Length: 149
Image 1 (cartoon, rainbow, N blue to C red):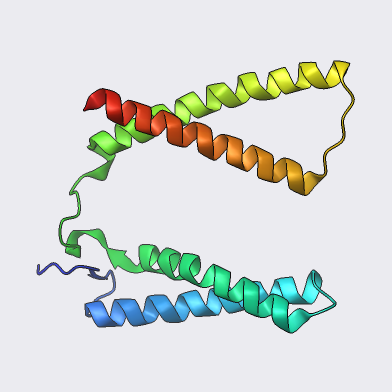
Image 2: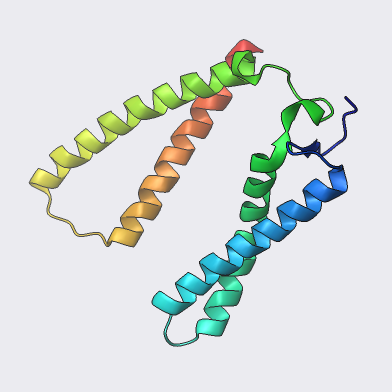
């Protein structure tokens, strides 16, 4: 089967069809999410909220749609068995290290919070934990990659 840069759909068709369907599905998903947020979260300026959320979600929703529709074997240069690649091994090791760091970090935070009473909003805590987890994972992944080189 002929391979292309962006692949072909699982259900048959051309690369152009795959890209068109991915963008259309991504736009629909982003618009639906933007409408939900504008309706239930932002009462003061719903049109602005819809526009910002829909535009921010459009690339992610389009990429996710493409991932669900593409036939991997039709992508030029794709690894035939990604589960057995070295990158998959680095990912697994980084995930394991991140879990262990999270367990120690959250446990340590629990001990510290029993002595020192502090208050953090839920959104700030979510952002801090997200940055911590992503940073830990990234550092671990690149450390394993560097060690293998």
